[in-house]
Length: 418
Image (cartoon, rainbow, N blue to C red; front, side, top):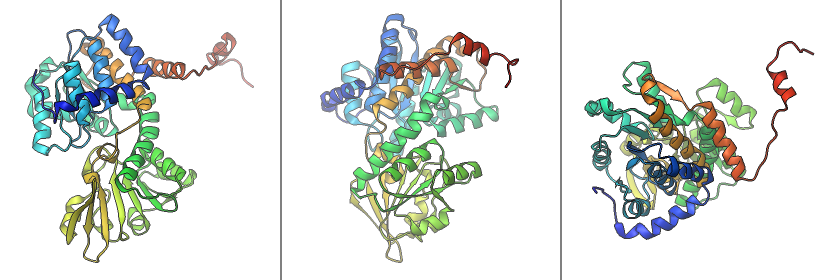
């Protein structure tokens, strides 16, 4: 079995950490139990380009239980947990190509190593597998049933491809599932981003000004959690509806050019490029802390910062200090990459439980329905989304009401008015 990981001796530690995460993933465990019995993915070569974390390991084991031949690479150079990678290789015989801190050349070599297995279904976090297939490995397309996509950023890229008529196979947008973005993006990103920023800096948030760039579901969660820890939150937006919502939620809203002058902490969660640019770094306070929790590090214009800085040093693990010509220091966390995975452990397992339940069921859906689908981006079927929510509530010991027959008839009728 071919693989490329950092250190096989880390496997025992990884196994214990995977077990710990799996204890809080009841929905995925129920799916795994069914998969083991029914083998719905038997004979499917499944390529995963995801963050190699303990939660991802539980997904890999679920897909494997369903009969799939699973191979994994990282979706971010800094997000791999090396002990998890080692455990998957040693204990589960799953080929992994991922090393925390790998350079760009190694990152893409690993992606191509996964693609060398000629996958039938792709599972992406940022659409790197799909984009590499379309741009460099088109010979693989004829053997691909379809794919799934985990993130907002990836879905944006895939919808662009579909709109331009260049997407060559169907993809399920897992991120669009309510049981994904309403929970993973909001509560997962909100908590894990602050976890990463605090682990990296050991700074107090209470009483500081925290600038959130982007008020999608990730931004909402981050703003909510930063406020909960005592920060004064400013929101940056370009969408008038989201900006208005942020105002109604009690936050200050202003352009980044103004916020740059007053912020103590900054975090981008937009999915776009150069959100914080050179002119913004130039006016920041001495000691400003800047992070990104969007998928790609392009949200921060680090090229401009490198050019204008007169000195750079690694002052602390995951903290690069740039000294500007005016003497002010700007601190970049995790090299501008996903701070929750670069400096912490990513989302808690309880929210990834639902996200990866969507991934597992979407892979099953693609296996059974993929050949009938158009070459576009599909949402997760509503019945799957609701079933995941039902299973999660059941696992939490929470019961809800059901409509009476009278209520169902009323909702289905139009005759009865005031």
